[in-house]
Every structure is written in C-alpha cells, then in structure tokens.
Length: 123
Image 1 (cartoon, helix red, strand yellow):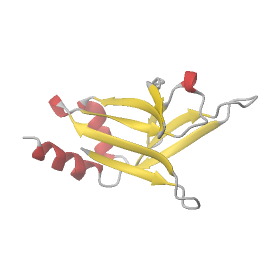
Image 2 (cartoon, one colour):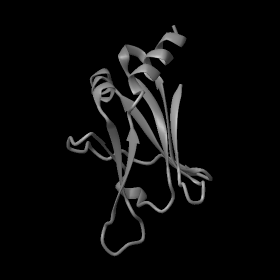
Image 3 (cartoon, rainbow, N blue to C red):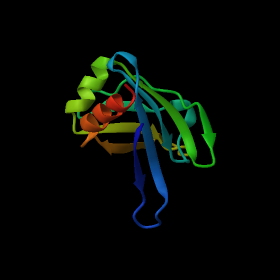
Image 4 (cartoon, rainbow, N blue to C red):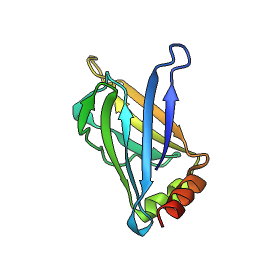
C-alpha cells in the first residue's frame, strides 16, 4: 500500500488522503478520503493531467475523517497514471446556490516507483 496526504498549511488539518494498493493484472485499487462540505450526490470525477474528466464516482460513506470514494484503476488507467504529472479529483461544493467546482490535485510524482515497489513486496 502507498499513500499521499495533503494538509492545509495554515491550520495543519488534512484536506485529503489517498491510499492505493496493487491489484491483479496490473491494476490498482484503493480509496480517497475527501473533505467535508462537498455535494455528495454529485460524486467525484477523476481527471488525468488535462484529459477530459471521467464519469462521476459515488461516495460510499462518511466517517469522522471525511467522506470515502472508492478507486479502481485497470491496467490501462495505471499505465496513464505512471506517465502523468497530476490526478485531479473534481468535486462540487455543497450548500451553494450555483455549483462551485472544487478541484483537488494530487501529484503523481513517484507514482510509478511506489506502485512497482508495492507490487514487488506482495509477490
């Protein structure tokens, strides 16, 4: 398993956390913990670099730490992630008159070696 956590530099609170593990066939699975205050029915879309966002992924539950979104990347998606620079999670703010997009960007620097190391450890 490998992970990344992003903190608010002013108050040191976690903004988001993502955790992934290697799966069969070159795939990767895991979850992201999103912050509170987002429109849950809208889900989250994933966008690799500047490509078009994918279909919305539904939140599964909310815990005291935040709301969970399951992640499942097939081998083709993992190949794209290995060469990409960023993964943007697009959410929408809750309780606003008009939808306000909330993009949260995850650096993919180190993704390929982290996944390779995880795959090696589980062999």
